[in-house]
Amino acid sequence: MSRILQEYEKRLTTAEQSVKDIQSGSKLGFGIAIAQPPALLAAIAGRLRSGELNDLTIYYKLAMKHAGETVLADDVLHAVHPCPLFLTEVDRRIIKHQKETGNKILSYVPAYFYQMPRLFTEFIRLDTFVITVSPMDKFGYFSLGTNNDYASTAIRTAQNVIVEVNQNMPRVFGESLVHVTEVSKIVENHVPLLESVARPPEPEDDAIGKTVSEMIPDGATIQLGIGGIPNAVCRYLVHHKDIGIHTELLTPGMASLIESGVANGRKKTLHRWKHVFTVAMGDRYLYDIMNDNPSIESYPASYVNNPSVIAQNANMISVNSAIEIDLYGQVSAESIDWHEFSGTGGALDFMRGAFDSPGGKSILALYSTAKKGTVSRIVPRLTSLVTDPRMDTEYVVTEYGTINLKGLSTRERALGLIGIAHPQFQDQLIQEARKATLI
Image (tube, rainbow, N blue to C red; front, side, top):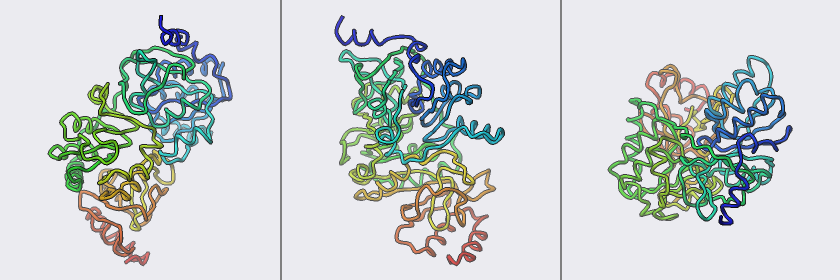
């Protein structure tokens, strides 16, 4: 047996045995979204439920089914302190529980995505980090697959690293490799990866997606967020040429552009010919396109989302969305009625990086209304937390038009934003703008 296999075998164990050394009162971190390791989280939850483990502080982002049914399940909340860096439905369920019981359980950690890896080197000292990885190669390297984000940093700074090997996790290039000697324990669990399936498109998606696609020139490098509008943008890019990808999130829509040759990176000025990402979420199609594909590379969020790095891509186009924007150009993309709904994420990272890119632009694309047309997303003043300051907002697109806020006075901004609001709210917005002496 080779030395590499010996290193693997001496670390290989069961999920239950691998988590025995996690101590009460310690700090645990786990992989984002698709990289959440189901067997390891279930084993930790087993210790929490038995009373053997308690007072566990947990740091994570994008909790999905595996976390929601284990370390964040209702019956273990008395023993954990969830500290999410981005909220999902799992966390919103806990927040609802807090309101009903009056007991504070979950506490959000605000951070720009590109700064998150640094949190785990300077401010949050993890005792244990657990994550799903691809199988080890003959040289002793696992791949982080769908997730680099803060994982590649947390693995190198946590005292105890436990990996769950899953043959369904794609093998990805870039800075995605972790050597067997860098991990404490290994568990094997070959189960299907979670899939994030897009909802059927809304009419507004096509209208906005078409407009945005026309703002993207051939040869541009793109970053797209998540949801119906970015998916529509991908559909309307099918006749473009030489698109590059430098994105926080890699999606099935982007995978389709890669497979068709629309995205080839030929004209990129940074990582030419390569498709760069830090997190991937989607379906089996996406994971298959990613697997062992030398044109797809992942890097830490501290690199991919760093505005100074993003700006090195010429003609960088970022497309993100928002919950609401006010007549000053301030954007909220994370909270509702002053309560955290999702998280800061990387929208502002790319907004700033794209604006500083030669020939680049940042685009905020959103529906004009919410709640089935009863609420305007363009409002007189934000009713919640500011995600993107008014000085950073550039292009804003709704199904009713487009405006570039850069260089506009406050009066021009207000009138321009009212002009792309839903017609049924325009008179009210004009009245509010006059009250505020904006117009």
